[in-house]
Length: 515
Image 1 (spheres, rainbow, N blue to C red):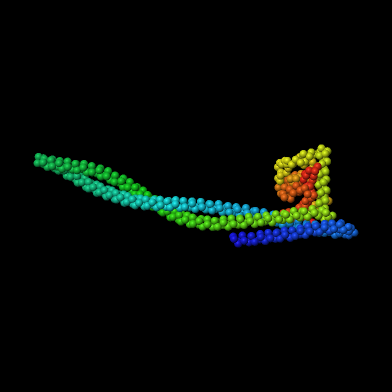
Image 2: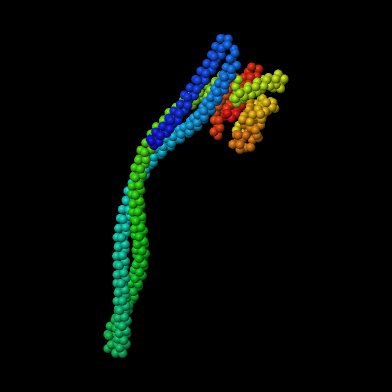
């Protein structure tokens, strides 16, 4: 970064030095011209004082030739100055863009730095929240592990209860088998008692006692059978309840197994979440450190950008000084052209000067006659209240005098272009640079295309750029300006003031290619 700045400064300083050198060289030429003119006038004065007349025509001819040479030199100076001025304008524009860009970069870097600071703050907050979340996750995992242990204990107890019920059921079944045996014995006893009763009845009186015993045995067998039936019913109920309890316990056990599996899965998920939280916390730490590093780098870049901005502003100011000096040279060159009026020159500049001055006088007289005849009021002519023409881009304006100029000025302006192919435009402007009636080739109807209308529909527009504004405001005998177009073509703009009833109205300007 620093090396690039140094190279840029070196290039600009070299360019500025070249421009300054050209300026100093041009000042030398100007000084030479002024000195030559001074010597010429001194020479003529001495000739008149000495009364020497015979060599005067030859001296005048030689002096006119010198004037032509001076005019050509001044033209070259003006063209060179226009080229330098155009270059400096482009360079200044580039510097303005660079200054704006650097300023915007510095602002964006500052915004980035501010954003980085906020990002660091949010990263710290996020890191704290992740830490809290990780702690809560660890606690949840511990609770799930405790719940899993309790679930395992509960399942063990359920399994023990299931085993006890199975044992109870087995015992009930064993008791059932015993009661079955007792029932069988009771049935057999009952049969024996019945047989004994039959035999006692046969024995008669001798078997009566035996019959009593048989009856008692039969009654005991009956009670035994009744008792075993009650036991069977109770055992059946116990067996049914045990079976239902076992089924319920199996369902509880299955639910417990499913719950244990869910708890295990939840524990695994919480473990994964905890690991992710830890990884996120580490990432946030790394990000915070990275943002801190970027912030430090941005601060360094911002400082360099601000230094570059200051250097560029300084160079821009120096370019402004060079531009002012070149502009001063341009004004001095304009003065030279005015001083050369004493010569009877026949170059292109002199020809355009005569055309501009004559046309300006004719337009002034035209306005005066129209005012005198009542076709145009002086108040309307000097009313510079421009009314925008709707739906025009570039913007056009209408005034209280543009209808008159549309009708009267083309007959004065168009022949100038027809008779001089090197002249690009010729038209009258008021003191503010307003051109009410342009040449026909620049007065096409609006198309809606900005670029086309900018080039071909130029009438009724205000040309208040540096060159255009001076054409209307100049009150000297004439003003010759030289400038370079964006196409690279060097142009002269010569204007002569227009006076109406001794009041300055504007000027007549002619644009033509440099000779």
